Image: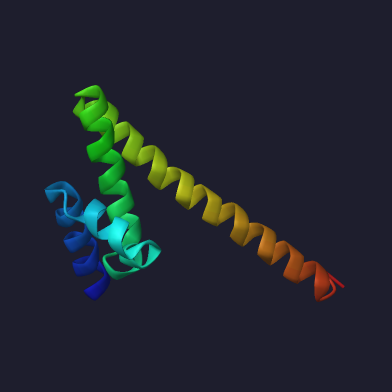
Length: 92
């Protein structure tokens, strides 16, 4: 529940315009404190909405970020599992 709360706080701070200022002052550490992934998705949505004035395009950009992160995680997990399996002797 605390991770969800941090994500919600991060999203609220991004939408309110506070998070980018905090991020400039604190650097990477700011993203860790307020559920960086949720804040990144919200930031992508807000930035795209401001640039295109289209909620549909903003939603698509945010979903593409989520799918990219999940897809990258799946590929890396598969590669790590395969390498571990091969190092331990495979099916032998």
